[in-house]
Image (tube, rainbow, N blue to C red; front, side, top):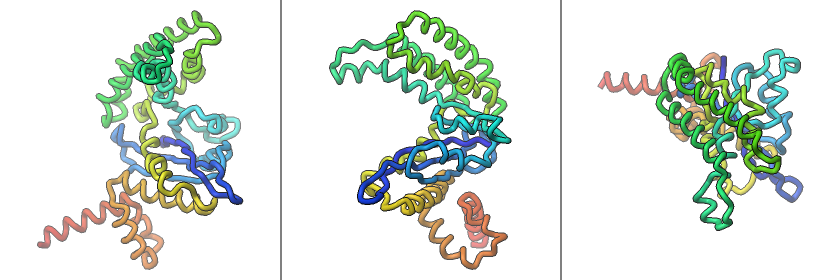
Amino acid sequence: MKSLRPTHPTIRILAKGKCTTGRIWTYVRDDRPFAGPAPPAAVYYASGNRRGEHPQRHLAAFAGILQADCYGGFEPLFDPKRKAMPITPAFCLAHARRGFFELADIEKAAREGKGKPVSPIALEAVRRLDALFEIERAINGRGADERRAVRQERSKPLLDDMHAWLLRERESLSRSAEVLKPMNYMLKRWDGFVRFLDDGRICLINNCAERALRGIALGRRNWTFAGSQRGADRAAIMLTMITTCRLNDVDPKAWLADVLARIADLPTSRLRELLPWEWKLLHQAGKSADQQAA
């Protein structure tokens, strides 16, 4: 089963004399956390808005695990009645932790000087989630079966206890309590948050997709906006190539220069050789042959 990790940062797109808020939809495949065989890759798409029709179109033919936040636009993809091969959701625990952390950030409360009390429930939730992340750090890069075995032994009891604790604490809170929002965010989607326990290929967090958009977040200060929807589409294509190169430790400039020089004369049957991970292997083999000849 394939696994993808999406995210969708904003991008300003010039339209009729003003800028609209568009989106760059990012989908990343990265099997390295569970020592999977597939090479890492990323693909980007641009859109003029955040409507769910965009990811639904992008992923219409995809069947597998989607590791994401709880964005409602993905929901139809999980419905077996609307999709012949429904996608299995696995939600990001970093997003769940963020809601609690904002209510438990002692340093931020002190800096802002609001005197707002830190939520003890949020603080405890962060502590419990951090214990899960600590387990994951120890098994990162190991095989899927080993990751699953460790999770069943160490992570599952922690999550079972956390689920019971959240339900118990929720009963004692008033409806206006701020901490109810992150609690309900997790409890309503509990099956998706704990799916990683039964599948070693699933990660707790969606950080590889978050890292893939870092260049967009930093670059916005330099290029400010896309000049048109077509310009945003071209930017998405360039981001797809550059990010996939970087994920495979390939110099994007060297790769692109070589591809542009060779692609016109390369038979269709050999185009696969230009994929960054295939290109890297061929160049490494070429260097090794040259060294042996020398």
